[in-house]
Length: 307
Image 1 (cartoon, rainbow, N blue to C red):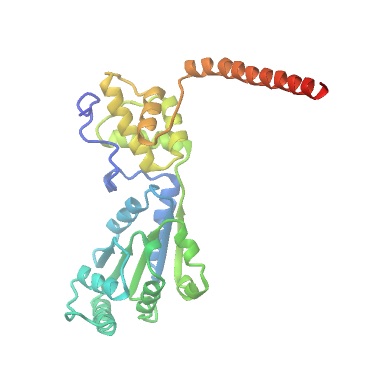
Image 2 (cartoon, rainbow, N blue to C red):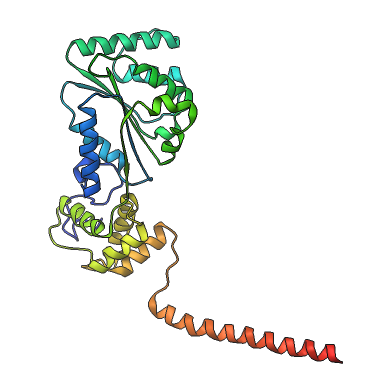
């Protein structure tokens, strides 16, 4: 709706994890390099955690796009599965044939055979599990057992676990200690800094076709405060702010548009400065009235006691 008015060829602040819009802050670059190095070494488990909306899935897709052509990738987006369901899903992703209504052993056998064949052909196999904090303990243990298959140099199955911070706490449990020891790399993705937020907004607008600044410096700083540096929240606020500003035919997105957007998206109740100036003396007056009433009541009570 607002794209033509602001000289955009695309919607710049969609919450879809589009790698084309990936903004590599210093932290994102560090995470990507760290994970790439570990996946190209001995393998095993790699752990990527972060709060909701910090860009874990987008970063993971960028990581997968950088993997060598001789990599077979299986992605599991719904980890609320039993052991058999997870292994069957892994087979489906890798086009592995398995019996109807298979047993756990049958699934493990066909997967093991596939991994060995892949290795002999010079190929590597990678399993990516998103929202991994929902994995059951017995499923995590089964994944550990699958990674037992290895050569003298590396594991035949590499696993990336992507999840929210509670996943780290889960892996500290005593019964999962063996799996925790298999994790060759861990990275926790932090929110964007205030400087990063301004650069992030400019980057997404630039990718969408807008070369000139559209959000004022003050509005970017305000969006940082409102979003706490979470990219998904930034996108929601910016998209709504553009829509509201377009409705008023504004050529620059200011603090007012950001506040109004946050109020509608995040249910944040903000007060314009003029209203705040009115509220302060009003609150003082009401407070004085309450104090005055309290003093009068106290005098009356004392008088009654004396009588």
